Length: 155
Image (tube, rainbow, N blue to C red; front, side, top):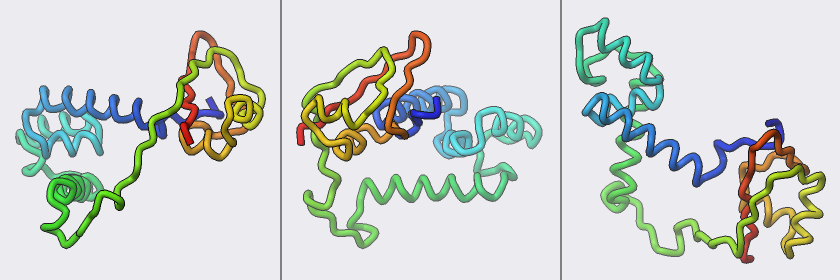
């Protein structure tokens, strides 16, 4: 759908990523190999494991992008766990402030004009888009039995 990019739907993307990571860990039993597979795909990593007779991505010859990704994601994890160890001093006000939606509307039919939809729900189009980053256009097409959950922000 040209009107939607659900990779920017934080909830759906997070759930999909977590499901992938758990499934990959059940297969590889090694977090670095899981990280490599998140970047290169399970098929690519499994093929390399089989052909190179290794079990861990740390012992595989991998594309440069994947090799770098593994260590970058590990570094990001460590930084999130202990920012001060890396020279970051973060206060609560430095973090992104999550504002829960005032309500969520399940949409099963096209919305021809999202700015009008926003106004009818008491918010600006700017606020609506900020709460729903996955919306890409001024309208929303809903095909087949698909539905979308649009968050109406509290502020």
